[in-house]
Length: 249
Image (cartoon, rainbow, N blue to C red; front, side):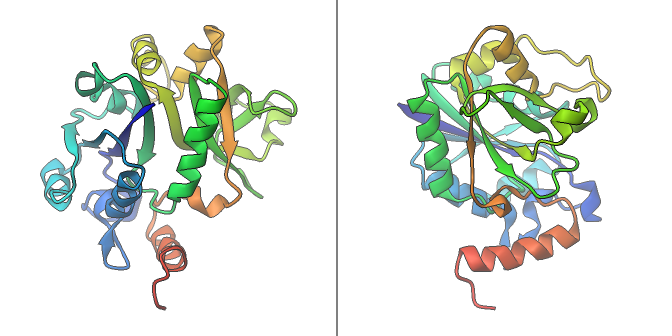
């Protein structure tokens, strides 16, 4: 089955205290998005689509050496809206699409290969990469069918019941979708929420309503799913990248 990859790289990253696009902040001398692109390319996809927005030309220049297609998200109306920008490019693509974040450089190619294999073997419409955290505060919780890889629902912390808040398995924001199903579902979501944005996670609600199978694959290494939103998290990521890539201290 053919694979395409969408990488979200449109954000400003306000908490980084810099006007530089978040994905261009450097860890061990390289832009964060370069790590994500290298990992994506190692999966040998047919196409990589980079969604750019804040200081789009800078991001385009920084990634010019990669075999990718950059697509502008302007204005930026949420994660679902970001993925919508790739629809024209992928309209004839018949396969699966992997969605990654340009500010999450620690995910391993081996983990993504296992995620894709899980998606295929379970014949799912959508599969989410999860991790179990000692403190899952702030993350959406993944509620599974008991003793199964099937997902009942993905619930944001603010909407979770006491029982759901006790769940420590969280949504990493890395997904595999059947491409046609993804864009059909994106056509059904709306901005009826506090942020007035299109949320990519609303696609899972469409899947559940339609009786489509949603699966979860859990990484054993929670560090892999860390995104970088603050200078402190960037320092942590540098240390972890040195371990992952065998950088010298």
